[in-house]
Length: 283
Image (cartoon, rainbow, N blue to C red; front, side):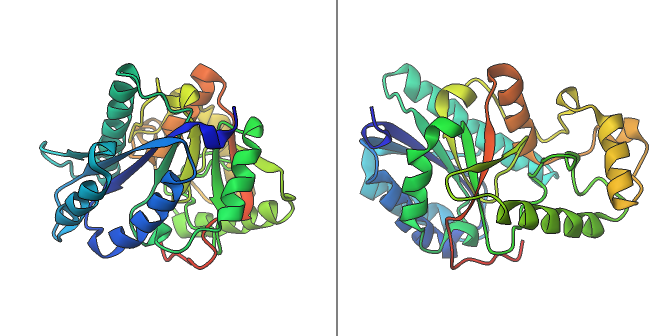
């Protein structure tokens, strides 16, 4: 069966995204038309704008093919904990719909802010899907690779924000990933342990039994070895003693990807191609 004959889940988290939602949904609608059938799942958190009204407008268009989960729990002071909880709600709804008969071979996680509001390069998307035998999760390059917090690749495994000089570390990582992806030919992918960069495609079977976590996934990392590697590479010290560091908030994508690899052998990859050519983020 070709990927065009398969079903897709499309998941997003929404908080204060009103001014970008219509543009993001233009891309979502295009994606839904590429697959046999689809379900859209949006996790909404308390906002200061009209994001929920906008989501309800789009639900009228998609009907029972779109779900909105509204967070009614108290918000944490940790941003990464809130977004981790929201993404887990999307996974929960995916499992429920899978159990009631909607089987989707793939799901997409898309940021609903400016990151994915520009036109997509559909040729890049189609080419990547045609090569799906080479990956279980794939994210994409950008003009100015911005999402270094979610990135774990080669010796650069530990969180970029876990150091005394985080902005120096971010510069190291961005230079490294820019150089690495520039050497990856079209049709091939960079291996990594975690990457998101605002948009990623997943093989459902490899991730459906996993979950996001806002804490550092130390159980999947040889931290002392990694920290020593990175100190040598960057010449910067860690922010705090190791036993304290391991409980600091981390990017929720790292735990999700590393768990899927440990449990299900998931292959996490990055395409050197740019899916959103007109967007240069300031994140």
